[in-house]
Length: 229
Image (tube, rainbow, N blue to C red; front, side, top):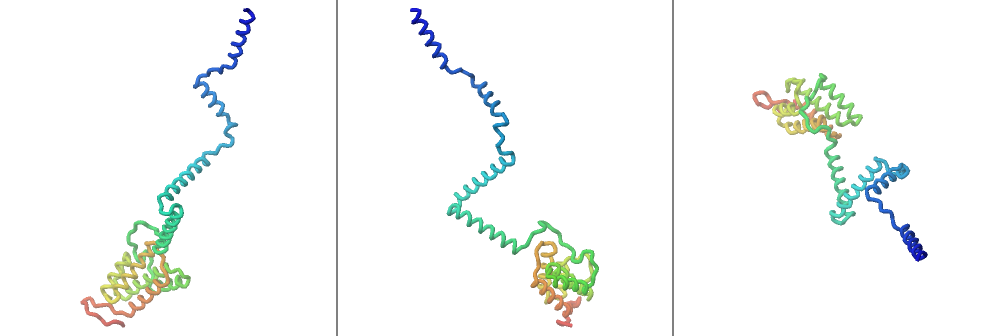
């Protein structure tokens, strides 16, 4: 009996060695966290910038995938839509020029300058020879208005704008009123509208300047004085 009892006891002890240790969940989690906080486990982790870039590209990928799913024709259709939008934007940019101001007030024609018509014409010619058409248009418009002031068609007024000059001169030279308005609009576009002028606009102003020089204005009573002088 003693031998049998001793054997049974030994079998129970052996079985006890295979029973797992019952460790509570919280201490086990804390032990795992402490172990994983060792720097050796994070030597090759991405830095903050890399993680941010990864998230950004993931967002771009998700956005593209969603757009491709909604666009007709899938990804190929989306590419076509993007190309069309880019093409339209480029066409508008080329047609309207680079906007420099979102809001503006009318600028005076001459600013602080006090040069004569001949000086403005010379400056316009110099700009034209260098193909600086924007500056050439501005100077030729100034020459045109200064010449009207020198002839007493317009009263000299430092604060006058191009639109005001065109309106006043158009009343006295109605045959050229429409061309004067177009010239003032061209000046405004390049002076503060951010657009670029071209050779054709400059040559149009030159022709108008010459035609105005050869035109007699109406008298104050409204009687026409012929076409040319």
